[in-house]
Length: 154
View 1: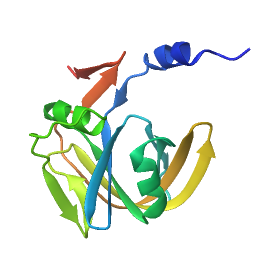
View 2: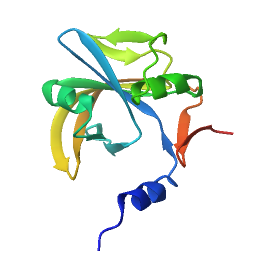
View 3: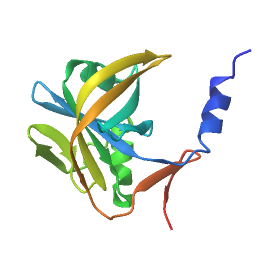
View 4: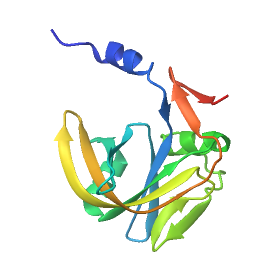
């Protein structure tokens, strides 16, 4: 007997997660996707994992690129999260910045530039593992997600 998807989603919604936007460029076009399925994998070498639905537009992009970015959003960036989660706001000014040709989100609490080292199919998602080549962080508060809603620490 399999667990119904709705029940599984509701159960996992009790896990507090940070909010990230995964970014990549292909053929000169910048793209981003909000992702909460992000985790560190290893300190030596520095590896991270992001899980992406195979039906997502970003999935094909990540298969095609060698490098991608992960941006941990700040409490001030809820609209960016919504925008990259499939609710685009045509009037939103995305604070794009580049690091060696890779698009990142300015104002993020942390930014990682990753070289894709592996991709593993897992159910309806692909697990992309990236080796971190560059990182930057601030002491600003992160945006967090719990029970289907955005929250702030404190």
